Image (cartoon, rainbow, N blue to C red; front, side, top):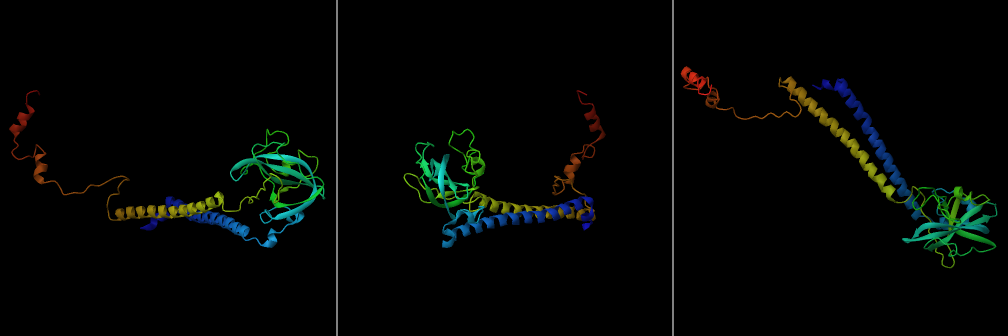
Length: 293
């Protein structure tokens, strides 16, 4: 009865099901691992020890990755060029960052976000940086990339402003090399407000983390749907083969057979004028010569 499974049509169906189900499980497991990785990074961020929160020299945290992002770093040097980073929000308020380049003892400059001010970016509102040799402590961050949340490319900005904090954008504005990282100062002065460090990309319980969890469920549902459709097609084919083995006519898709009691013989005979009771040749002749013929 199940020889139909060896037909070319069913070979194609079987191969598709055998390949599709493991693929769906693999993709679902991969999305689940992505969600678990974000959960682990979120827990690690909350379980940092006091040693992790203590400030260390900047060189020990470079290059910045997921483990070092947000760690406290110290750097010594002299402040030089200052820029404003507009359209930055803090506590649901719109404002701008005050970014000053710190020329370190190694020669490279370190972008330092000295604080945040509300309103439009104005150079007269930003306090000047301290003069002389200073030591700065702040949370180290990786360079921003275009397309990140709250980051714009910087095209069309006035002189002295930049859209994103990155070495790629700063090297075109200053004549000295710049670190591919920046720090946000934890202690500010005057009206400046400290900017909290942002979680690195791909970590934390953000919307993307729950998207990974949703994709996990979708892939497992796809696997179940493939199995369900295979069994449904298999059952219909087996029923059709059974009907053929019993000598029953195969029904076309969508055909419905209505069963019921047979019509009475008298009604059937009355419907036929040639076999109806009392019908004679004369009656037949009268019908054929009725007026109007």
